[in-house]
Image (tube, rainbow, N blue to C red):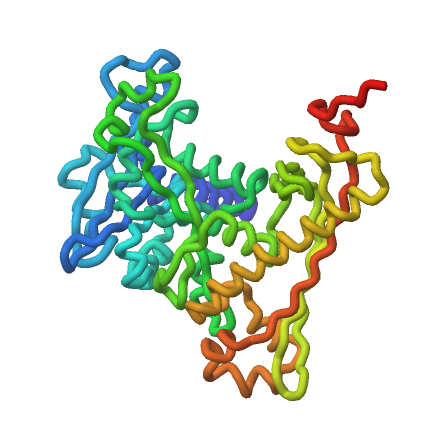
Length: 399
């Protein structure tokens, strides 16, 4: 009897465990959402979703009548209300567990993003591994309506392009939800987001015909970094300033740059390695920041008259490149100081080295930051000249 009782108990427990998921979703009932956009619509929020059309994506040839994605929009007092309203126009439930990109319009970003991010951060169905970007000079809805070649799903294109450009070009930065919210909550740091803009005609970009062009007349392009003060967008960093930000943050994995040769023309370099140290010091009761940057680079393209085999040439080029890098980083810090936004986390560095000093300055940190002395030391080493020593445009003198 005891053995029979044990068997019954085991069967009951297995029945509980194997009874299925109470919150399961059938695939045919879901609208897989890969992109979401937030805009202002009067006093309400406009939520736009980019939904995958499974028939078009699954089929290699496509059905021939539909686009890879469809976008729907709805307005509401809150973003989640607006999202629920979408059920009145979509035949399936919005399912955002595969979200790749969240686009926030510049207008909304300048008003503040804390309120619109609260709902999506609480939603248990949404993972936090998507990227947040700002629609520069346009709306989030319009960005999500643009079709993209190569990557059939535009949200995937934006996701992968952001990752690729950050690794290979450097004026962009990939920010996920958790990191952005953490920065918003820190009194010692302000945040940034990459901007995206529409190049070309919007109506043509929404048409499937754009996918049949070898040179698309309308496309999406990442452009600049949005500088936030607390939760509001206050300014934009241009491409050089955006690179300067990434140099200061130690984010540069690889990029290209150029300098002017001593006798005119240009020479381009590939950055292959960066090492940076950011340390705070207290001098006469005042905090200061010291930044030391070490770059290693290779010569990639020579478009000037120069003798790279001359032992004095490489040190001269290194000095020119170091001076230019310092100028770029200084201009980035100047832009941040003008907006009194510590996007570099210098406040963290001061707090780490001298908590007492931080206690004195943290109540008025935005003004302290705008007057903060920052010392920059740049050290650049040219490692390789490439497979060709001198430029092919330099002809040997005839004897």
